[in-house]
Each structure stands twice: as C-alpha cells, then as structure tokens.
Length: 226
Figure 1 (tube, rainbow, N blue to C red):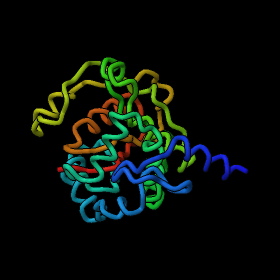
Figure 2 (figure 1 turned 120 degrees about the vertical axis):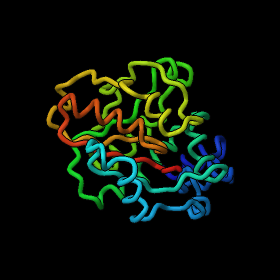
Figure 3 (figure 1 turned 90 degrees about the vertical axis):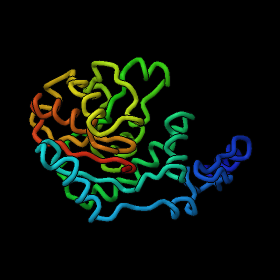
Figure 4 (figure 1 turned 120 degrees about the horizontal axis):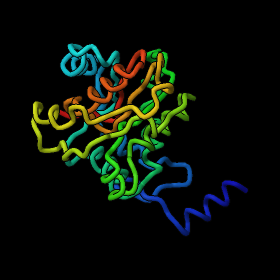
C-alpha cells in the first residue's frame, strides 16, 4: 500500500535528478547513481593535506572530513546549487546521509552537530540556510543531536566567492558569536558546511566555540574546493 501511494505521488509530482534532470524511479535517491559516479571523491591523502594546509597550524580544528571534490560547472555544483537556490531540501538530507559513513569511520566522539550559520538578512532573502538540511541528514544518520540556533553570524559579510585567502579571513574575522554557552561547554562539536574552500569560515566558527568553552571542534563538508 505504501509503495502504491508513493507511485501515485510520483506520477502526479515526479521527481528529477538534481544532477542530470532525469526522471527518478520510486526508490531512487534525489541524485541518480550515474551522476554520483561522475563526482570525484576526496582521497585520504588529500584530506590530510587539506587539513595540514588549512587548519593544523591554528590548533582550533581537531579533525576534518570532506567526501567530494567541488569542481566548477560539474555535477556537484549543480546539486549544491539546487539545494542552495532552488529549495530542493531533500538534497540536504541526502547529502548529510551521504557523507555520514565517512565520518563514522573516523571514530570522532561527537556530542553535537552545528551547521555554519548565514546572516539573518541573507537567510531572510533566501528563506533558509542550506547547511541546516545537511546537518539534519547527518544528525539522523549518526544519531547525534544538531542545533541551528547556537552559533549566530553577528555581522553581515560579503560573499566569499571572489575573495582571495587573506580577504576571506578578514571578511569573516569575529563574525560569529555563541548564543547559549551552556549548550556547548565541554562538548565535542562537529561543524557542517556545504563546500569548504580556504577554511576561513570554519576557523572563525571554531574559534568562537573554543573560546566559549567547547572541548573539541571537528569540521566536515560535502565538497572541498581549491
């Protein structure tokens, strides 16, 4: 009966792959297997190199994981843009579940999952924060609570897209604050973002958490870009 209802629902409101726009079958995920196979996965060596290059010297982020390589004008960009700008919320949960297996293998002792916040003006303009849905997918898969109300972006920052490494760091410096210190005191936190480039935003969030009493901060993303 349940399968029949899904089939009827799909007939009237068909779902399409976010990568290639192919019509999906009842049991298919929001991204078809053919598209997933075309997305480059990040090797363990590259993850380590990215951690060493972006996070190690600061001593703030204790571990880092990303599953895919983010490439301009490729499938992963299409998928993330569909979530970020086209309200394809199921993609966020799917992507969160998708990266959870890699995180499970790391044996991090995580107490709480926190999505990287966007400023309330940007959220009002877009209507939502895409990282909230990724964090929700991770939370369900890892059976670890998440909250989207603990870290606040306290000042508006311009888009990081066209900024160089130094400009990105300056752009987000002191841009975050913790709303409820009791919720993170002594906790091991996992920060979640859609794509990590220089790591500047992750570092600033991590600094705010550590100085406010968090024990350990880890970071993860769906994709990693140059």
